Length: 338
Image (cartoon, rainbow, N blue to C red; front, top):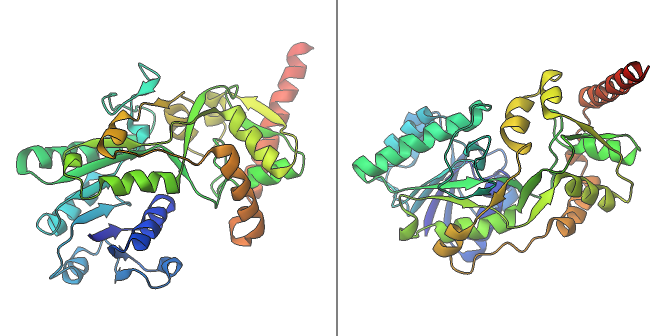
């Protein structure tokens, strides 16, 4: 297949790109080129900011693709631009939406592609819903060959997946564990969550590419493994060889006392129990299954992060904030107890 990825170097898209290269597909990456070195020249580069529509139109002149996938579109205006650029140049257009778009609070803990889309807590999710609406309207009215993919929490070896972290990522949570500090966990840590390794996600995604049965469809791609946040944090601590010192705080309180968007990221997403029914992707891609178990993969993550300084972004502001939250709540408990 001749494939164009807009972006192509993120957590999800890097794994897909590597697998496509391995399979011998003709892969083009359209981005600013700063991270393409990871592919050692095995992709064809179209260097431009996708927002520079005239420049991109010139770069793709004479090209037609079997698949175009946009990994960095977040609002309908960006997809309107994509439609102008690629409506006559691709047999399939894949938009990466988000499982966070599903109804919050959930009416049923089992999520399928038929679960209503509604998230009053997170603008990011509402924008993804608007993007889906725009593309499906194009499919219904003009036959634009769209496929919508909804990932949930997809991870790779570069960071541990946690619910409460700062603006610089999750490394500071690792450091708090290593130094014996308490770690904030939203709620009581018993809500259910699904983590998907990016290499597993790539298998499902590639199975949808060039798949005529996927045209006009929205498809979620996640693991079938369901974990509590307590299990996730315990697995991280075990991989580090330390005891987990969990400190539980309600998501509402965390949102109220933080500059981070915990209203969206927690109340509108991670604080909810999610269990995905992945029958649809398994029907569209026979044989698809996720094989990367988190308690095994987290050992690789910890090893990678601790051996790669670029992954160790210390976040003093987040660290001090965690201490302040814990101290404040413990002092409040002392006052109430008298």
